[in-house]
Amino acid sequence: MIINMNKRIFVTTIGISLCVMYLVGTMTMVTGLHNSTKSAADMFEKGFFVVYDGYSLSESEIDAETIEMIPGQFAVCMITVANVSGIETRVLAIEDPHNILGGGNMTLFDEVLPGANFGIGNATKLNISTEYALLSMNITSQYKPFTSAVFPDNWILASEITLRTLKPTLEDGCSFIVVPSDNKQATGYLEKKGYTMMQSVSIVEFFELGFYQVEGNLWGVVISSAVIIVILIYNIMKIETQYRVPDIKIIKYLGASPRTVLYVFLSQALFISGVGSILGLALGIIAANAIVSLSQLLGFTSVLVPQVTLYIIGLPIAMALLAGLAGGFFPAYKASKTVIRTSREVL
Image (cartoon, rainbow, N blue to C red; front, side, top):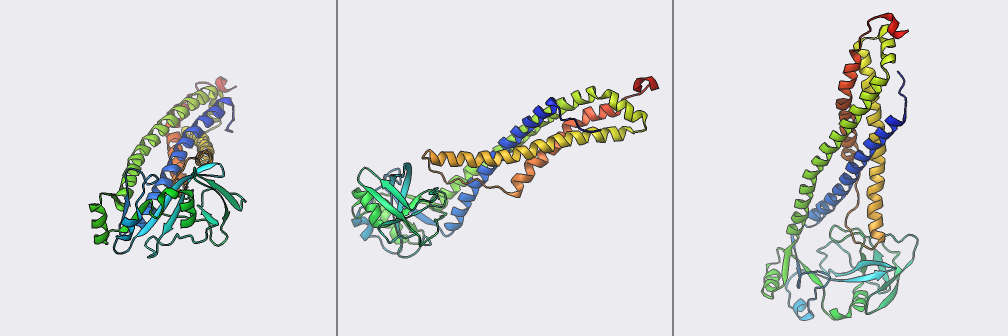
């Protein structure tokens, strides 16, 4: 029997695609968040302390006298919130003479290095302003857009001079300090000074714990989506088998076995589920990337980059197909048991 794509089947397919779209969109964003925390964990495998004053890295200020007294290896970081060509973002400068963070220094005053996901288009200059200064900066041609396991990809890397111009209240100090955990002298000194010290591993574990909680909730989304698809397929197949009783009687009169009828309607259920899942997969990926891009355009900072994996592609499709089989089995089985009492019923 040929599948007739009527309005009922079309609406059911759209319903299935919306379920899959929500599932795929959620999975791509959660996986992107997990990859960000995992890369941070890899970066901080040996362990670092992030040292700052108060409750916020952006508001923290550590004086020059404290910095001069820190023994051993450490990196000094300066950060400010600025308006960058109409987008509120973080501008970062790093002094890392011992290269404990794996690079990231900028030396030229008149150049900045946007993050890989800042979205500069074809621009060659950026206007960066704070309450203290307005600078027109060249986008450096010496480096590719920076990506970092430590800092979000939509921040901007600048030189120390640029940062101090944008935030003169720092004077010769900094916003926060990164100290290797094996530098016991430095950590002991800073702890006695009363600064807030957060171990980078603890930061990563905090985000990973949140990820695993979300991942656990994802199975609730998978199960609820599967139940909805089962209901949708059951209802549409029940209606379709009722409408096609005359066709069923004809093919059975011509010699089709109950198993053939069962396979025909199960194939139809799989077709509807498959089309809906593929459409939902595409919509989910598009929606996830659109949400992240829109949030960045609105000025929200984010470390989240949607990630598409074979698992994200395979699980929703497999779920939809299995749910389609489950929802379509009973109506198809009932149709296969249609009885022809006399030849007049098919004439």
